[in-house]
Image 1 (cartoon, rainbow, N blue to C red):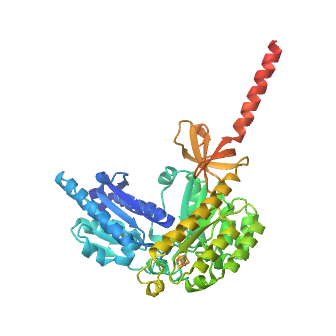
Image 2 (image 1 turned 90 degrees about the horizontal axis):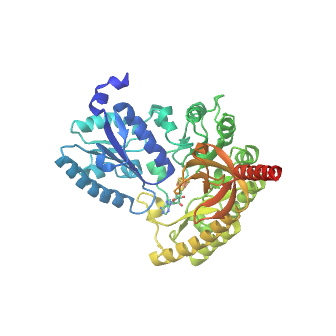
Image 3 (image 1 turned 120 degrees about the vertical axis):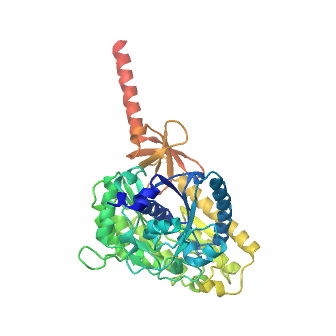
Length: 478
Ligand code: 5AD
Ligand code: SF4
């Protein structure tokens, strides 16, 4: 039994604090790190000052990532010193994509760090902690041959049950697209898909623990090609069909997709599977064909427009979100205007936008013709103003509509619950706590800055019913 291993004994009741930066894949990985450390006796804490082990799960996608990690490590050095004065040891680890990219360099530059672990090696954490406990500095950033997913313990039902009705499930990792601005193919490696039966088993475990909505994760999730139940590679569409059969799994989402991998079957799944939510994150990055080519996206602005038309023909209620980069080397005013035009044509429900930042080791970092920072700032502001306008229009278009909301947690105000709309918007509703983890029809009354407000459609019915009964009683009485 693992619980009786020496590691478990020495670590019994130790606490781990994990700080997560970056994407949802990192959020998922942080949970998996906590899971991997649980058999070794670690319980999660939300308070870094109370932690025997502090892990930074870092992101390298954009600017100053490494600098941020080093300054956080400076703060942690102080914390470690304070805890040492109180006679407590603190172990510090750097995980995630900065760990992968910087490796030994981190251990060299920051002596406060005890361990450095890349995203492919979290299953080694218990052993690394044991070695670091013996005074060794441990760095593991190789890409192991075995399937990373196989060796990580599946999240126990008890833990899942405490995490609410929505969960992430990584089905694919890495990327072979090599967009010229992006570090992902280098930090996360080549595209790997998990076998269908493993995904289904994990999804079923989640559902048994009360999960009702699963978001399938992958850097390039729609390139999914895991080994299917019949031994042949299955597409994401086929995987969605199999997941949609699981009783009690009400909602499915997937992110992030590349326009080139939106095949006909996946588009049809949005039409044919009611549990596939009408929301699609489909980054385009730029609307200029010249820049798209320089980014190695391998599609044009019009290819993207035509694709959006086909997806909307299959599911007219679909909300699209995107990612944009402004100031890619060589981007002219005309290129930027092409991006703005594409945004006007597509009408986004939401979008993330960034100033280009050269990532060491990517082909983009070797390009000249940099766009001055002031110009990038100006373009970013203009783009964000347009997106905000579209986002507001989308929010307002929900007013008066009634749709299902999956209640996830208590709201800020007493008696309030917060759930998600099919389009991923937070919805605030006065509702009894017993409705947590259930899905209820809600009629939207008004919008907040980033969320919606509504009333339980059924409670309206109840209220109407109640009023009718009171009226009937009054009439009988008179
Ligand atoms: N500079 C700016 N933004 C970037 N992204 C990825 N790499 C860079 C970079 N070097 C953005 C892209 C991507 C999102 C996750 O981050 O828009 O879709
Ligand atoms: Fe990066 Fe996405 Fe391009 Fe892959 S497809 S290189 S993850 S931006």
